[in-house]
Image (cartoon, rainbow over all chains, first blue to last red; front, side, top):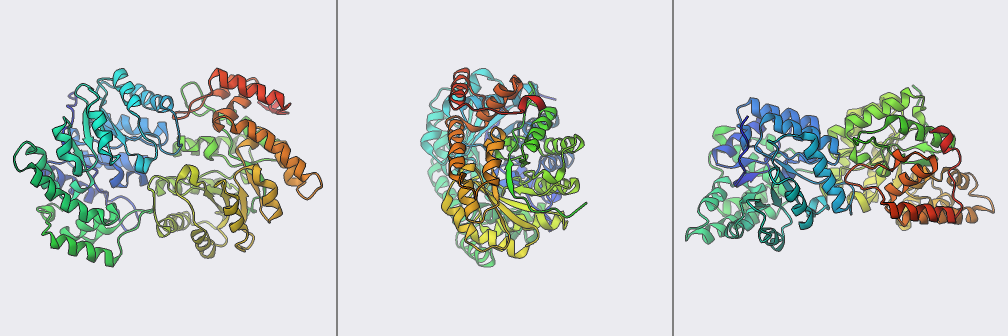
Length: 308
Length: 308
């Protein structure tokens, strides 16, 4: 097993398909992952938009194994492995390291609110020590609008100082550019800062960021990757505007079922409509509304039908 | 297996002891459960104050088995079995039913926020159908200050109407008496309404409630049970005031480590101080402060040393 290189570029929390009985559909997940890879997008499987927190630890382990057995290069994977129970986080993270994944994206435990930096530090520290591998690469996951458990700059810095070769990056899904900017300005050496939406991709790249980990890369991968590779070109602001137009369409709907609806519509595979409770699928009116808006902007998902 | 009778009276989210390596300490948990039973308090193991959401599904199953093997009557147990992942909720709930527990206390999935009543209904409905047992008794768990996912009166009523023999009660930990009162006034037939703190116990009993499921019953069980049995006596308001004095001492500290510190101090067993990350134990100054305040009100935990 080689030492993982740090991630940069575009990753996506890969949407997780479900069967009629709500069990995860590993074969369709593999197809979506293959399409992402073909579009130069890396795999932040088990992110928020993957409905990861509606999956058990056993289901996640089984899906990871299926993807690797199915030919996905584990170094392209950054699975979400941060759970409420530290025992789950350790188990999942150990498995991710064993498979040779390029890193893991780690939520803080998110049930108990108002917890101290000391408590959160101890959580991450204990996970790192119990996993005990020099191949572990952690990307912290700051998403206070959903987790309701923010990661403070003090906490991040303390973790970087204690574990410089392990805590190597962060996804900032605060939706607050000022917060991202504070991290970019903090002077953390080669610390990989990803924004949680392509909305901030150009700003992030111009300020020394590493890329984005974005839900809409599930549906608009090539264009997002194109901005990542051409952020220094004269066309960059135009490319950013084009990304924003697509993003705005999806943001007008509940994001996860909207992404899955687009996957269903453009792959002509209705199985993609399914979400796991407590989420609900778009209703027919919403699906038609989404479809019309996407047609209006001449949106396409090139190649998705060939792979699925 | 006999059909479970509905709960009433006093239950507690039993505090969960941990060993030095943060693994659950099943033997000490059994002792605490035995002490609770000796004080007429039933066992809402795996509640919020049990640090349940810091435990994996496997750890909970293993602890449940240990308690039953250790002689705890399963009909006295109301384990928390509501998880983020419906697959975990189904697995845990099935196991609780198999063991013959008197019921289960069920959180909604709590990662995704702003979910619809339809999505939450589908979560509970799917669990009930997949568990598929006439012995399943669900007590819903409404704790919006922590879960950030409230259960609306409409949702509760819809579940009661669809599953009248299964959805038989609720714990209201909103801390909002007006919310409890609305449920008490809703006219749901023999639906067992528990308040989430003894602070509201007398009010709840006077309005047709079933009792309380309270964290502080871990440390003050006899007095809380005494009010439950004597709520119609002339002494009831005085008994309520006495409970409030104790509760106020604990509420001046982070509740879970304060409960554990009291257990440690009064059982003379320092292992009880330990909490699992992301929580942190009280520091020495806080422990001394708690100890002094408890002495000032002549607080005791009779019998705890004999059992532990």
